[in-house]
Image (cartoon, rainbow, N blue to C red; front, side, top):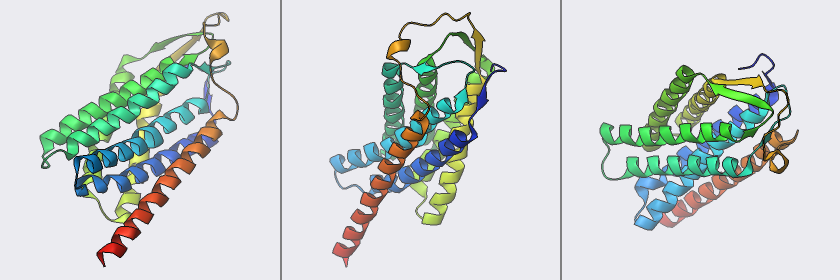
Length: 247
């Protein structure tokens, strides 16, 4: 990374908080996957948990952390690539959950699901990095890129195992805290692989249509926070209704 780059520590903290909340929400929602009685219910549970993990815990954390990094020059983000990176994060986590939850549990299937999910998360991250628009030449340290990919795969395998083996609330909180660290570790390793060199002020095409702004990171945090809390409230109300019906 360039010597000119430094981080907004508040946004770094918010990126971790949203990753933990997204991980906790995903673990709560994943409980319904093995309990689903129909293929439609199972798919709905997979997509809900995939959205919480892929978009809430991973993509939102990634974008807030990107905004936390001051590159030493004006930066905008390509809206199409940024949106596509969110779709990839959602699809990768949903696919991993779908594979891991199909049939009986075994380690080979968990590993395959974790690799699919980890590679997808890695693709999400570096596509999000490709969305950066600024007057600079960029390159990557491939050793750190490979390290970030390994972290993503290992974290995905752990996340999938936790999703189908944990039920206690306290256990899930602890697991979400650890998952938040793993997601952040992958992201900031990927950021360390990103090298920036000034190009003499040559502005890339598409900057005018790029997204950015001083408060964008805080805005994404608040919107994602509201959506995740709303998902948890709906989840708990459904649990209460099921408990009342079973009495």
